[in-house]
Length: 140
Image (cartoon, rainbow, N blue to C red):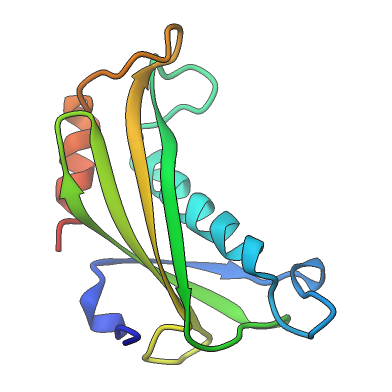
């Protein structure tokens, strides 16, 4: 079942682009994953816990999935609801919902998993304390 906006503690907006649409007139399925990635990383950057060029510890995406309920298309605005459903020692699982314009029910719901690694070695490391604090504010 699609979730509703009240289930998510954080939102950001993404304007669809003409190139997001496929030949069927709606946003292509692969673009939904770009919305997930954009929303998560924008949140971490805006909270000051991710410097994409210099952070010694970074989150790598190791798992994603998406369930689609209704179409989104250009020129819609996508409101991305985000929450953390699991925060482990070195990983975090987000639930992300995409809402079309002012709709209260999600057009799609996805999961997105980051595993934190040392940038130089790609070996897993604990989620840094400052990142953990930001993620805890998104707990369901």
